[in-house]
Image 1 (cartoon, each protein chain N blue to C red):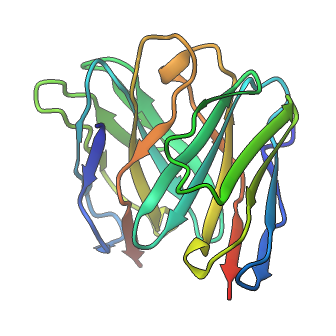
Image 2: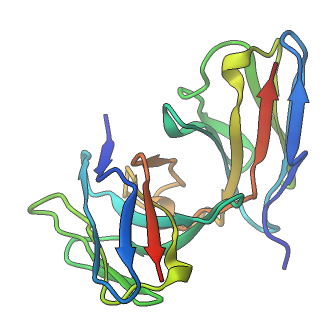
Length: 116
Length: 116
């Protein structure tokens, strides 16, 4: 069975450009999470969805960031306009959604974003 | 808010040495506790977890016991191998109520290097 799929794996863009990161969760999973990893701040939760509904977006750094989950098999994280400080590895994770906080989250390979 | 503190590395050991990576947490309620491992260029993989006090999680020779009285979840392994070289993250999932998934709060990560 395929794991969490993220695209692109690497993205290099210039400051001010729009960036869209994509995620396909594991089939049948009802919860989806976006995390950001940087050397300075470590791993941070940005936003998560249960049954396609955003539950907590308090980790989204600012209005330049937005996330959507139009259906159970697809989510996007968009940065517009991008800035050099957005450079990081962005991870998507999914979990089955039936056992709450006890659940294991399954991580994708990440998208490494560099904003010049 | 919730937080996780773990020893910062790098931690360098010789093969077959005993490993301990300390992890303590601050949380309200009864969180679930996790250890994730990240190999270079990859996403995070669950190593083990414990969902209530005094539970012991174990996998691949690694163990950790959920100690509510000391708010700790230290990772141990009796004899490490070169292949254990990776970054290890302690994490908690906050609500623990069983109702809906919850995002993870991570420690900063401990880089483990095992020398032959």
